[in-house]
Length: 182
Image (cartoon, rainbow, N blue to C red; front, side, top):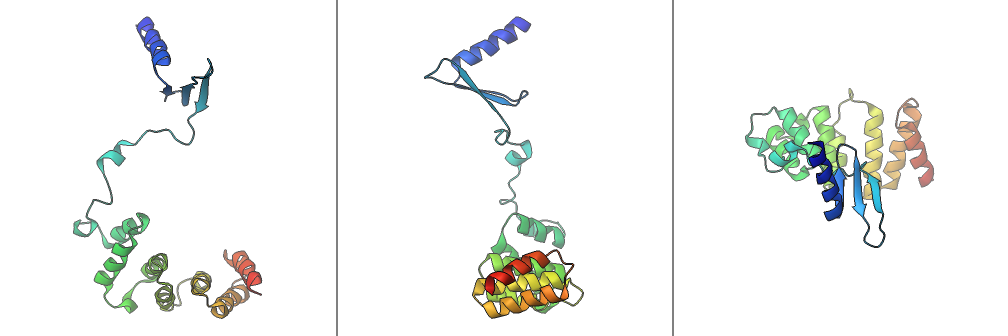
């Protein structure tokens, strides 16, 4: 049995251009100009497609007709970057924009931003409740206003973040952005 396996491996080396040894994590490429083989580690590109990727295509699955919860549908649409469908889904489930929860409003604002609807994203963020962390709201409003070219509003939000939220994770980013506009 061992001789058969060894001869199979040798034949594979002789007749194949590339030999991928998955268990060892290497690819052996024969070089036609040299008599030596090149051994490369399989670190980034293992060329193995997981079985679940072959059997399930999330873009072909109709989430809206599934029995998944509303939160799961929103997260799946967002993670799979199906922003147009997600914006429509928000309009279908909430109707009026003022009835969004804060978390859903943040997702909805980001969806609008990614769709290039910057002013609508700014307007949506204005409805965030006082319970939501103000530093994130200020930073996103500054970012969205910067994208529209409204430097004055960008500086106001960055200044508010710097002044009112010195312990924020956005503080250093806000200071860097604020300095670049001065």
